[in-house]
Amino acid sequence: MRVMINQIEHQLPQGAKLENALAAIQAQAPFAVAINLQFIPKSLYGQCTLAENDQIEVISPVTGG
Image (cartoon, rainbow, N blue to C red; front, side):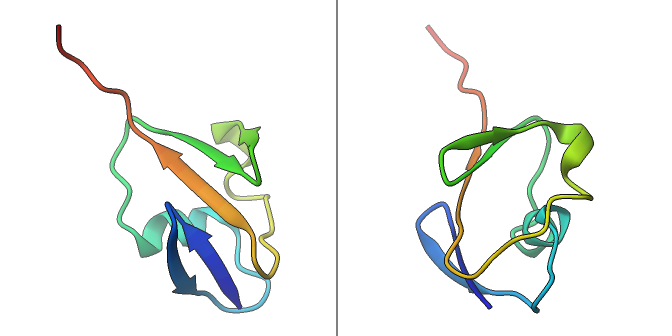
């Protein structure tokens, strides 16, 4: 199935979980995740099943001054 991760198209198998999408982009902690603008707690990454055309945003904190 097709999902967008940080505005880049990715193909994942049907029934893929959020943790599969994060593995596909080799996400490195710390980060926060939203699917279709809805924040997803880390405790649900393994339970959150993705759907065709989901929009996933992986956001890393920025430091500096």
